[in-house]
Length: 262
Ligand SMILES: [Zn+2]
Image (cartoon, rainbow, N blue to C red; front, side, top):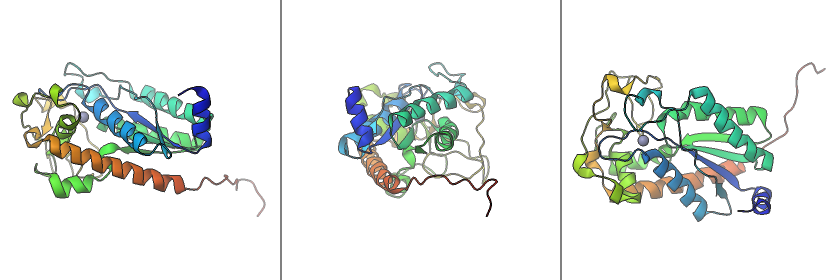
């Protein structure tokens, strides 16, 4: 796009999709760009399907990754720098006149930081922003119709879900002969990790190298390209549905009740 085209897209009220992910180890069988490939793919395809509604930006390729730094191939951005950087990108789109911004995350540990950046957009600009991981869009369909790995913990990292998505987008880069099953630890009723099973509301992320050898958390042996194609299609449907709802969210003027006579 040229700058006048960007100006017109803002005027037309298109929602900005900002994809962010990571360069991070994903076991023996998946390349380290897993999260980037998937997150950018779903944002670009959603925007291609609905150019009247959505406009995707370039990808933010590095994320917050301290828990995985004992594995080669992982890059980590410090948490405060990540929030600042993401906020600056989002604020720039706000300054262009885009009123609604969706921060779409492809890497688990970015989520809490992306949520903070979305809050800052609302607090500090005239635009509104929401933040979500792409796998949360229609995760229930995956869990009920495709999932074969154990719940929770079978679908956490380089797992049935992620490997299926990679196989659907770029199968030539996946080496399934090297895939191993290593389940995410399920310490207790409340302490576990799983991409699509929702959340136990307890946040606890230990350093991976303390308990993990392969870099996998889950069961990639259950992954197939056809599962990946279904996952992607459900994610795109969910993204468009969410954007249509977000477009309806009113942006009303703020009212100041401080120091005001009743
Ligand atoms: Zn991943």
